[in-house]
Length: 269
Image (cartoon, rainbow, N blue to C red; front, side, top):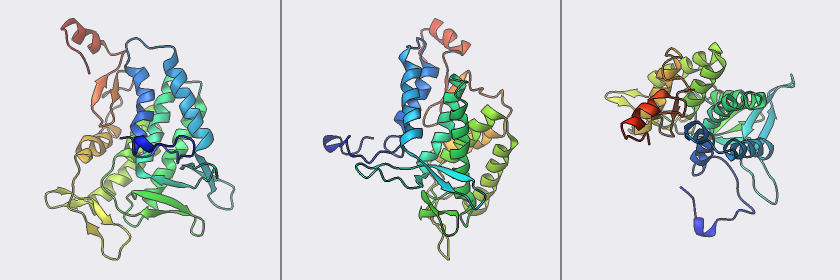
């Protein structure tokens, strides 16, 4: 979705990688994994974009007096160049995107480091909420030194667990499974209802209200990524399979299945 294409202002923004643009950035990276004939400019294109995200949208805020920082992907507006540590849940896909880019360009360890920092921020937005589930939009509160909800509903979104899955596959660090387990327990505690799972209208109200909605992406993405997070790493390995924005598994250009399908006159997409 491109919002207001007739009046789009590419000079003043605002600029972000949140809803409405997120899939474009995701597919810049995944295209290079899919295309049988990888063009020389494929990696160059997403390299420029990822480096631009790091340069222009990154916001660092102090964790505490120890000198550590949290890292956010904010929104940029010109001419003020004002950036805030405020993120949509949708932006939390970026940890996985940067991790996948690192797999294609292993010398870019800074991309992997960035992926881990962004994913930690998204996970903390869960840990700092009353339900231990992530709000639709969150920002850093300098008084409490915690991430607090700007929009405090939770609609079973997948982006944070998606990034946990990718980072576990790429790094093998047990903490990503531990974080995923924490989220899974919170889902069971706060969203499980009589005939499925329901989103939450407000997580910060005195009486938590369910919205009585179970979106299809909860089954297709949220639960799938949690399942794969705890599965053996040879199940749908990342060098042979990529996941589109709805988490459907597609053979990569390295997957022998591609040639088998081609011999039968079948296309993979």
